[in-house]
Length: 275
Image (cartoon, rainbow, N blue to C red; front, side, top):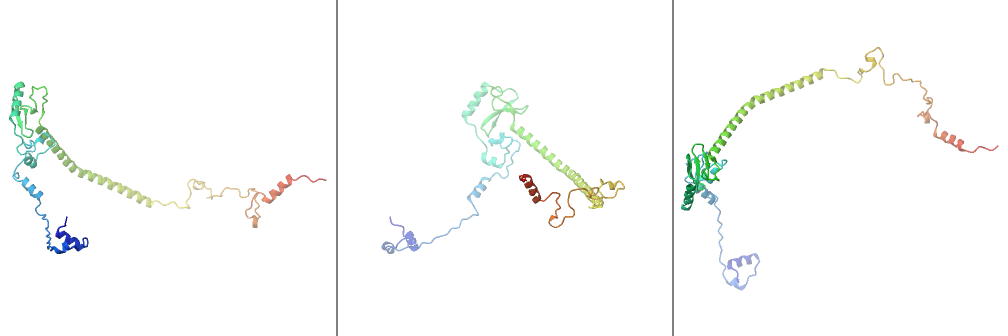
């Protein structure tokens, strides 16, 4: 299969393809490559985001009840925003089959006084609400599987009020931290002053010198003259040392020389001389 003329010309120019008569005979058209720079100013994602938020600029969402079409408003930790308004719009519309099932259920378990049915656009189902104590349930109150509980809006309101009280307490605690910090700073300054006084007192105290008298020395508490390390020793004790020795006997050993000991041992072990 022959290559396109433009590709064959490029390969031949780079030396990757040998020129043939067919390539030479065919006129090589001039290919003008056009470089198109990508426009980063208007990205499709930004345009889609701008279109997504159109029409909900002035919409306000109730932080307690949430958006009626959002299925997540039953979660007390979920706070509906404008995204919920745009994402879920008006919620679900009940169909005829569901309405017929609901009618049969209410015929079997009619609502007692004080209970009303309310349609939830987020789930596309009805729930039952007690107007006196704000309890809600997905089943009729007379049903065996009915579990009346507090509404998510009421629980969310209590959570927000509790968080508001905690934030107020934290702000008051932060206000009280200032005098506590001042008290800590004063106590730290007092400790530093005490250290300076001790250091200054140590400077005034006379240092112990090497020639100071030991309080345990008898000369410190009696008339005994001050002595030294050799005081009280008998300098004329008989130690057996030859104090007149000199020269090679400078060590003044109190025992005989090794040669004299060997000679004495030899005399003891030698046999007696015959007469």
